[in-house]
Length: 163
Image (cartoon, rainbow, N blue to C red; front, side, top):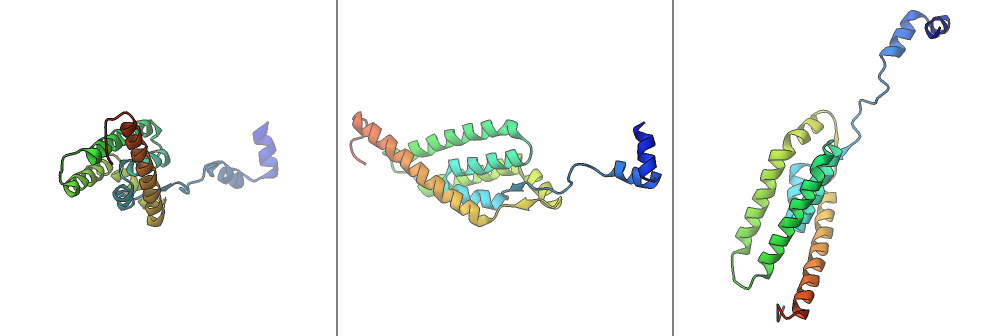
């Protein structure tokens, strides 16, 4: 019945063309962060900034199952970074930060690099580096506030005397 009505209003070529047109858009509308932008945010904002941007990429690249793992490891990284910063012994903080950034770069290359490159080749958009700088600064403020809160709590219980 439908075919009879369609052939009455359209000729067969028009009907064929309408049936072949995809109803889904082929244009990629998701934006992702490139590797260098994530590293800049990680340098400025620590593990939480890197985790936020990587989790955002996983969501935009269609891998939401990796978001929870990313946040979990970011929180673990934040705790380790905070403990290292509060440790009474003197160690090379520069070396620690370089190792941390190398680890973030390794994780990006292992889990997201190929998808980011494929996204770019398919015409997908990228967030600006300025946005990742802002994200890094915001997360550094959040990290500082959380570390200060921990210090106040530790001082209240007499674990840390001075800070």
